Image (cartoon, rainbow over all chains, first blue to last red; front, side, top):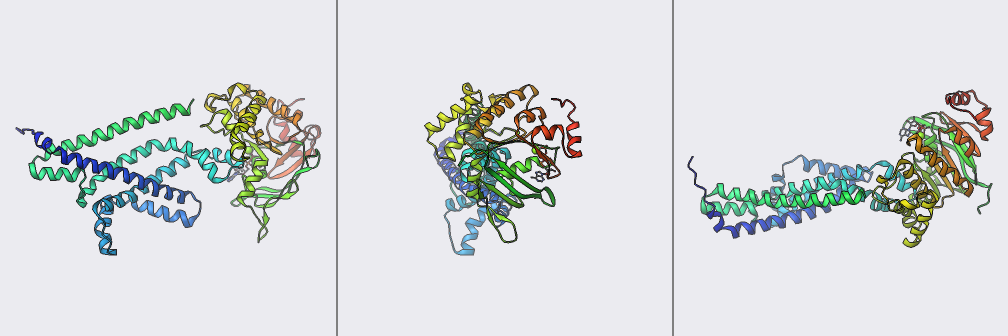
Length: 223
Length: 260
Ligand SMILES: Nc1ncnc2c1ncn2[C@@H]1O[C@H](COP(=O)(O)OP(=O)(O)OP(=O)(O)O)[C@@H](O)[C@H]1O
Ligand SMILES: [Mg+2]
């Protein structure tokens, strides 16, 4: 095999690729924010103990967990205009799909964290006469947050990688930018290798930071 | 208002079922202020369930609970009782509970554990909560451990912090559910010692225990629970030495080391 690598083809177009990476990060951060907000509501609904609230939340969660994310992207981009005459720009459609879909996963993370706190903790708080909201805020959430940290980071990384599906909506994120460069340079191997490298650098550094924060949290907890 | 000897807690025809199993089958009990009641009974007889009904951690299925002359809950259609969350929280603030498993808040220091109730339930200022919490920790012999997290304390120390946490609410009635049962034998003494010292406050206490010797010296009154009913109710001397019921005698005989 005499393949001659040529990364200059990529380097010449670095500005396009970096702009795409910027859009990927923007979509990721917004997606996490929307996912956390909706996921929090879903988790609260499921934990409410009322069937009228928990059942719809369960149905929602299960639906999104068991269908391919690309379909969600297509619905928001192509489906909404056809069904409701509502046209969203690619970023908004991608954000809506990503936010709603990841909400289902974040809801499970939150719910799992809260349920992992021993019943004795609830009982000790109730035995002091604490109301539900205060008990949640002062006793349960601080303990649950520590246990949520690792799965939360895991889910967020999943989300960052899922943003690449927005390329299918012609949203100018990293993959779409890569495709543009490939059509100009015919260097798919180099371009996608660099894309993989970029994602690796971003996510790997983020995981180092997360680990450091977690270790610090653990130390604070075990003082 | 706090006259020793008047009835502080009254239980009338209390029933509690879990699904189709009835665990408490009609408990009538009148607790006078300052009484120290030890509750005995074999495993599964309903001792914990009874205590948990007294501060409504479990909702009674039937019956009335009267604290300081005030009935808890409102009669509902169909003979049951409706409880409002806010009312239950107020009641729980006045009826303290010490658990077998301590249940300290692991993310807080010993001092913060004891401060939590006064801070977030009684609405005390941080400075005042801190002052009284420190005093209660000293009372249970842990003044020097204020800044330690529960994970750094022995079981006996954790349970003493839990007692201080309950005391910080200044409850009218204090409930103990087997407070020494999950402790290593050599740590039992320090916790029983602390509980015994509380006697001088004249606080009303109900204690589920398997420590018959301690019950004998500590309690002013002993209940023997069997299959969800109170089978025996009297002074320690009488219940432990000359029980009325054959069941009670058989229960007591099982404690081979039982001597006075
Ligand atoms: N939440 C619950 N759901 C179903 N059954 C329960 C529940 N809590 C208690 N029970 C049942 O009620 C019965 C009495 O339990 P309880 O804990 O009051 O007994 P106990 O006298 O405290 O026993 P032990 O000495 O083992 O602590 C047991 O048969 C138990 O299985
Ligand atoms: Mg019990």
